[in-house]
Length: 221
Image 1 (cartoon, rainbow, N blue to C red):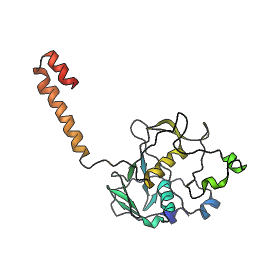
Image 2: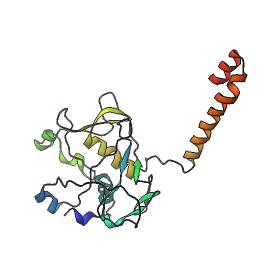
Image 3: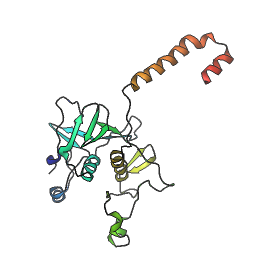
Image 4: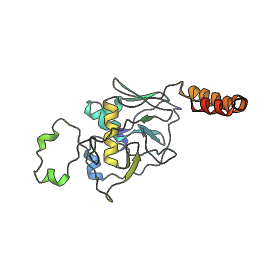
């Protein structure tokens, strides 16, 4: 039931290969509309800014749960997901710009207010007990997961020092469907290198020739 959601990736795509722990309850996995991975890739500072949309396990490539949820909401299947290595992951007509490792730069939405998530969060108990009518969720994507401290894995993101995994998933799904993800331009590396070179030339060649006042002014500028 995990392999049925595997997708085809071009040969030699260079996608990262990971170990897979199929922590799926079999009775649920057998009837689930899809099973996607929940792997995350922290940046060097430990923060999460990207979503690996696909990962390779041996000769199989698997979509992220966020990508699979987005596909199901568009009445698409895993077979409709296409990978263009180093460029994008395509979901039907939707083209999601990615880096060389098929990672999407997620857009993280600001909280509506301090302590109030950008996405509606309801107590599972309130829903189960009938306090919240089920019609509230009609025609909406509903993600179920733990948010209480100590009951959920917490991640550092650009908008929160401790975001529950289910909310991080909501940011990723919305980024995909709303096309709010960031795309790094192909010329970004050369622009960064050029700026670095200009600053280096200024510090090495020009700064020593200036008076203290002039050097302070130019440096500030």
